[in-house]
Image 1 (cartoon, rainbow, N blue to C red):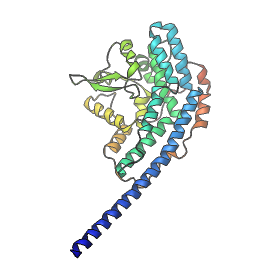
Image 2 (image 1 turned 180 degrees about the horizontal axis):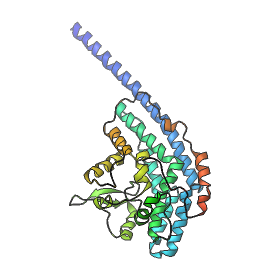
Image 3 (image 1 turned 30 degrees about the vertical axis):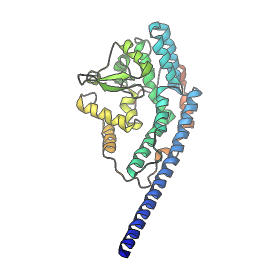
Image 4 (image 1 turned 180 degrees about the vertical axis):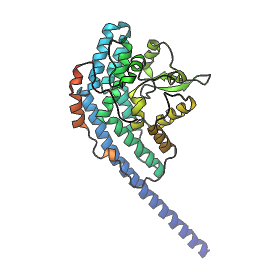
Length: 309
């Protein structure tokens, strides 16, 4: 009886010690996540201020392009008004960042979960960078340009892709505006969210992935953004689609393969890592000078090339 009692005490102490250790780890994870979350929230708030104060060049272009579309294409007025909202802090792109930030789990139960949520915070932080967000808004500008019948020029597009940019909707494939779904035959098609279904009427029906991906559709999100700040879920989904429908236009870049490999085989070694991207990424000064560029007063853009996918 005595031996059983001592054995029970040893087991009890063991479990108590294990609980205390795990609790300590959990608190460490939470502290790091909460500190990072505060920094990211600060950058998201800064982005909102820049949008509300009309400091982003491409946001100004969206407003100008939307007004021009209503003049030259009155039938597209509803779409133009919808696109004009993307120049504000009520845009789907901005609200998507806020939603992702709100969904970050700040009380992880494992190091793997903590690692996953820290990575998501880093990605959101990259997307909230004012300069990067402004670049992403070029897709909205170019979607309006594609509706103008070559009256309005595409912006921030490499010269060799200008023609394709004028003929395609740069928002197809961007998870802020819709997602890829399968029909009864197994084909993947683009389903717009909410009011963005107006594009189905404007574009003449559904965009199917196999057909869409076989053409050189340029978008900042597709070529750069999804690897810099797209969620891991979206990166994995796009990677899997590109594997099922390979073409010379949708081959995964090295950056995409790296992101896919990282998220698919994520290490559980959280080990006190910190986000370099969240330490000092308050980008107000950089974005303000960018936003006050002379480009904001015209329809044209001087940035015609990008570096690295």
